[in-house]
Image (cartoon, each protein chain N blue to C red):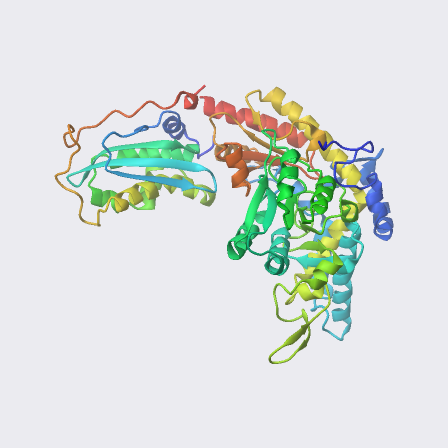
Length: 155
Length: 456
């Protein structure tokens, strides 16, 4: 069996976690690999220096989508500082498969997009927005992600 | 008026203007004669015998790490090379490696003779009226840039129009974008139908803008569409425009006769036509090339150099500054002879039959497959872009790879075309003279495996 397409990778691709538009997001970035046509929009809700909510949408290969699913699980509840400092190797470890150089960009698209979202939200390293919460949302509350579009469901 | 892109009675693809296949070799009688004996066993009953041809391509006998033999279906990216081409480069380096047009010694003269002989072979292969109209370049991209800089900068001005098509490779788009940005000129595009055929009725409307240049691909690298280049050239000339044809995907696959097409510039890459990387050519009309200023400058391209001015060499050397890729261009000459011996009419027929087989087998064996481009094999070269629903082409290519099947996945350097067809990316299978029905069968069974894996 192919190392790249282990069952849990395909499972994350078919039923990605945290897939959907995040309500009350206060950080967002759209990342793309123009060479392959992978494209994801990753949204964050940052509250008191922590990642209170995360969601992503977009389309791409199994590697890019599974990595976004795994990464968004991982960063939920993390401090913004820690998420901003995550290394590529940590994402590759999360995936647990050998990624060939040609697919590295796919595997790391979600990490790069997440870190750009944090940077663009104006959070300098070591400091994150505090005391902010969108109206009607308590810190730490999660909002269910929208269902994945029907055409992406497994046959 | 309407223009049909159908082939003529002789079975030649539209717009090539070339007579029956074997006579492409007839344009190069001595080359054909030299290789005729060797070619015999590669042709049976007027058709190519790919099994025999394959044996002449060393790489096709190799296997991947898992021991699966290579099924190479990415020839539109680059073709594989026959032993004869590899040997020609090897012999140059081993026996007469020397610079060209310089050395007054035996190997230097031999290198110059081989390099210039290659130019002659390439000229004959595309029926160029004069070998001095062949400028060696690294590839088609460099050839287009040469024209965009040397001709374009002098002849395109504010408000001028250049007409391209929606199906151009980035190589025949970006150089013109840079030129019109610099000159404050405009680009217009011939649109395509949803089947990937140029809408010539719109082309005729665009010609009323009196464009200075019309540049289009002969065969689409993504959809395989064969454009009616001779007809388009005639229309463009009637409107007073010059014509550049990007023949990178045509010269390896269909008979090309630049004299019959009648364009002003015709460019192609060597590495897609069984030749080495680093080889390629621009053919241009002598009077245009002579009037153009140099592109790159330095050694070789000059006649006399003084501290404050220089006189330039004659064509084609005026455009070949610096030491060229001598071995590669010699290899390109051998590749041209190799194809001429097979006969480009036969090459086209082989690929057309294979395309017909592939379109049928893929739709039958993999019913969910989405195919793009014209479905009539007469209008199309051996290029098949496709998708499997819900599976990204990168995953398709990656899973095919473990069966030893090599296809391209991505946008194939035609992002605007993918946007036009509303596709993020496609996978693409493409053929050459060594491709077989077994390659297509391996692709079909590989695709079934992809579907099984992702269905789970």
